[in-house]
Image (cartoon, rainbow, N blue to C red; front, side, top):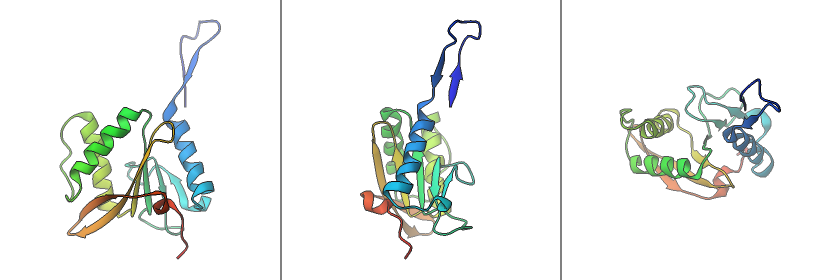
Length: 155
């Protein structure tokens, strides 16, 4: 979370990485605002595609909500642009720029793991919420949604 700089400098300088701070804030929102029990929230998905996840029940294999956190508004916008351009596809070959490859890994994680909601979170409460609609034949569509999709329901 912290980066230290020159050890001989007095005072010694450091910086804080913004992405973990945003991740903690999103985790707190899942619990306090959207009602997810702490035992159903996890950090880092099993294959490392997502920064935060929620599960429908303890011990579940697949996520209910998959969350990706980005430290800048530009990164958020680029991820959303990439994944929405893939909507309707099945699993996609990982190619292109580093940002596109990262986006494809997120998209493929949604295809493979079956999360019902994809939440992209950035600084200053910037966020996009998508319902992940299963189209069959391992294809998905990302449908823009609202905060209601993030609420925990025990039903």
